Length: 102
Image (cartoon, rainbow, N blue to C red):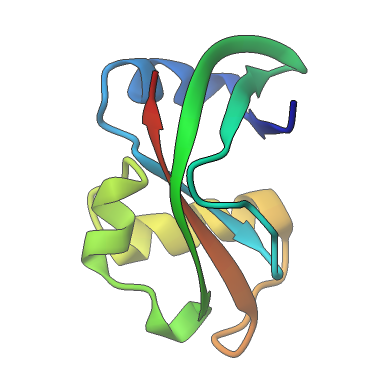
């Protein structure tokens, strides 16, 4: 079964339902309806169903994307993406993966 790995700091946000998506740099393939393991430090902590995966440019991300990803604003989201990936530009492609816990 495919998995999506998260930093430990996001586990509680996911389990509480405040984080319902994740944004990954590049074009990622996640089939709608597919069941995946959610992992932290490569250890499963939940199962989820992929609701949809949308490819966007960083400049197309908005506050709604940020809130679904557990952040207060697009600005906070971009800071986190830069912390995780290093350099990230407005023209870079990202995949927004929406999921629901099962």
